[in-house]
Length: 509
Image (cartoon, rainbow, N blue to C red; front, side, top):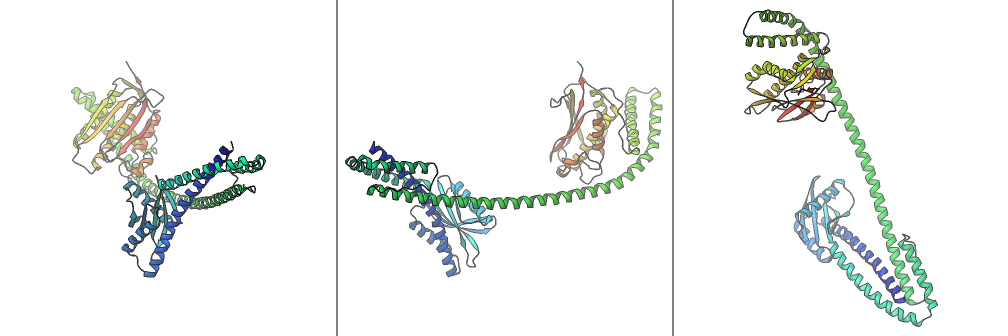
């Protein structure tokens, strides 16, 4: 039992000695980087020059003087975002590891922080700043110590310590068996108490064993070990606290600067938009009112003439064309009346509308213009028996407006060699909580400008040109809203856009 207790105590001491050895090696690695940089700075001041050959010689010499290190290098900083390896000695770093080390050093240089260290995989890198001839920050010196080497040293210490502990334990057991048992009970009790306090985090626990040389030695070693651990712990806490304070100050400064910049930017954008809208409204309002008044009379004359022609006996194909003209004149008259009434959308005159017929009629209306522009119109109805309760004139106005926008987008694109295509697809959309039909109007035009995506349905914003004076999409939105539907920009890119309309609908069997 005595042998076991002493052996356990020895292993415990060996473990803490191993931890201390590992920390010492890491600390020596950091100090090595500082020593190398100090030697470099002294030599640079003396010679008033930085020689690559001198750096290579220094790196190789330092590697021989620091047997634990596997890599020593000098990095020169060329700019705020450029730092390069100038000279090195030791192992050649793999590309991923070299890229990581270079990025970490560049970040440290950008912050202008103190000398420090970082880990990558199985390696610990320590770096220290280098000064140029004029005292400017020239670059950094870097040393690398691999954890495998540290562990080899620690394992050797552990093996040696374990062997020594075992020998000491056996010898002590023989001596203790010859001594009085009472003499050994108190030291072990004190040792157990001190170890328990240390295991609980009390680094102030100390041993005061005076009965026997071995116990006095053990007490001294333990006390020195605990003092070293306490000093290391205090240093780490102090460094962590300073780093946290620095990071906190830096984060606050960045947040304040970012918020100030964002507010200034928002104010500028708002002022520009207000100025542009004011100018557009002032000029467009006068022109629109005058045009609406002037066009009213000729349109009424055309409408009357078409009705008179329809009363005559003429071929059915001609009648179909005349009815389309009649319907479009009615739409134009309604638009003019709305313009003269400050663009108020009338209450829809809802009736039973077959979507297929509405689409076919709109296709006939746009057919000639698309043919003139060499644009192909493709129509796909997933279910031709879709019924709407809607105002056909207003819905046709929405479709025509979207078709016209697509034509403008196709004409404005840069690549003219690709044929223009407009697609109208009708299908049901399960994302909405009411029976519906979704109409997608897609084109291969130039797409919507990113800066106006969020303002498409605002007054006097054109979907093709940011500085246009369009109100078409505003009218479309008001009409769709009056039909309890939704209209939105579903997708846009440099290869085209898709506008979608979702309307309440039912499907006949």
